[in-house]
Figure 1 (cartoon, rainbow, N blue to C red):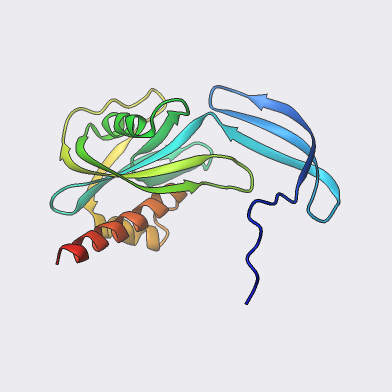
Figure 2: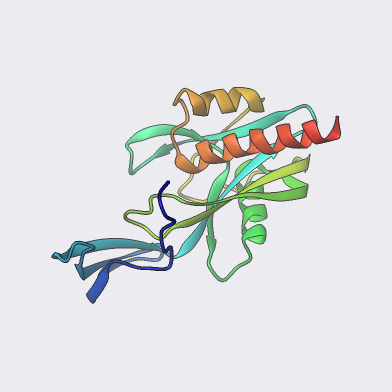
Length: 192
């Protein structure tokens, strides 16, 4: 049996930090560091100016909605849960409600925060949250100028299968769908 690590100990030493680039969404810095083995080097960090928010809307029949769009950075089409960014200073639930309305036209009466995650913690400090949205009402979508979105209504279990067989590859979507399936199954098991 291994002893528990000291989770408060940071083995990295930062010697200096230089901002290399920033825009309204991200900043990139380069740190001069001493690594855990004592060697000198650099470490690049992408800092996000928003929280990442994913929403899994689920109706009374067990259906959900995916959003399809072409992702510029990947140069490929991607099916994902409704998601977006919320300013760090704004309540994450408020931002998640806005994103669901913008991308799907839906509002929900019941919201459950089901996950906190880090999207790629070796290069970015991005923090994400996933919400389960239930008791849905439909309305008009309000996509942003940068979005050409397609909505797909399907059973939640089919969306989960898409995550399991890599037809959905977005990390927040995969984690969120698996967590939502677990939360809903546990909820249903608790009511029997």
